[in-house]
Image (cartoon, rainbow, N blue to C red; front, side, top):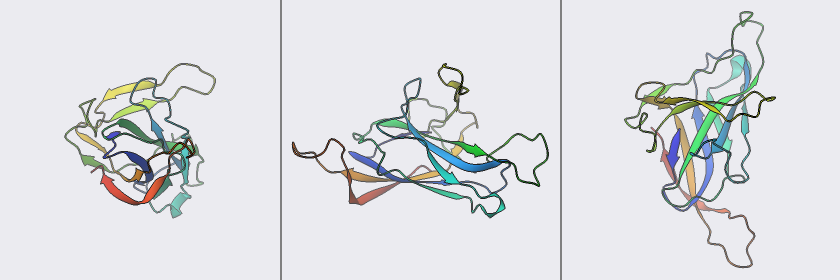
Length: 179
C-alpha cells in the first residue's frame, strides 16, 4: 500500500491486522519499499518478520521499525508491503494447499489511484534464483479496498554536524491510520 509521510520523521511501528484463518504460514513479513519500480527497500531497512504461531496466532502483528526506518520528508511517498514471511504447513492443513494469508479489507477511495496514499497493488517478488524485477498485478486488486495497517510516525531530530549519519526519532509522535 502506498502511504505518505505526514511530516518530517520516521516510522516507529506498524501494526497489521489479519484474520486468523490462514493456512501454511509461520510468519508474516513487512517491508518499507520505494514507490518507484523495481521497488527497492528504502534506507537500511530489511524485511521484518512477525511470528504466526499456527492456531495461537492472535491476528495482530506489530513491527518495530524505528531502528530501520529511513527519514522521510513531509509528503514523501513510500510503500508498506506485507506478505507471507515463511511457510510451514500445520498437521490439519490439507495436503497440496497453497499457503495463504487472510487480510481484512477496508474501503479506500484511493485504492486504484496509483499516485495517492492508499493506492494498492500486488507485488510478486522474483524467485530467489531469478534476477528479474518484481512483477506487479496493477492497481486496485480488491476493487476500492485495501488491507488494514496502522503506522506510528515520530518526528525526526534535526541533524547537527557532530550527529551520527542516522537520524533517530523522538518519543513524541503522531499516529497515522490507513483506514
